[in-house]
Image (cartoon, rainbow, N blue to C red; front, side, top):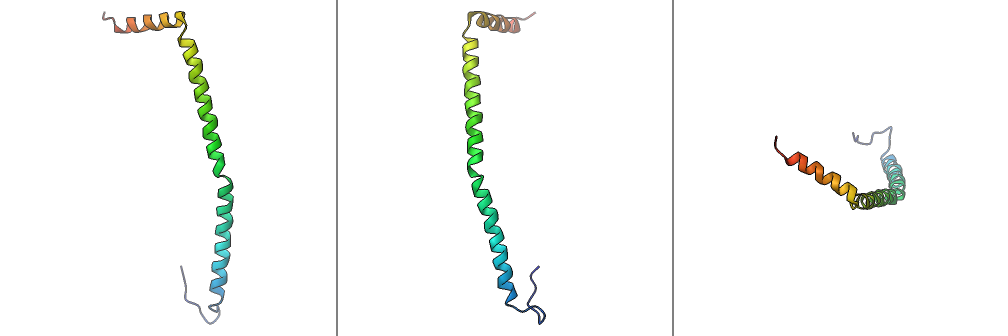
Length: 81
C-alpha cells in the first residue's frame, strides 16, 4: 500500500525505491527473454518425433499381413450375432 511521505521518510526516497523495483523487473524480463527459444525447440523435437512415429505406422500398416488382420477385426466387429 502506498503511503504519503512523512517527516521521517523524505519524498526523495520514493524515486529511489521505484528505480530499484524497475531494475529488478528488467532483470526478470531479461532472464525470461533468454528462455524464449527453449519452448520453440521443444515443440520442434516433439513434432519430429510425431512425424517419425507416423511414418513408422504407415510402413507397418502397408504390410499385407497387418492389412488382413485389420480387415478381419473390422469384419468381426461389424457382424451381428
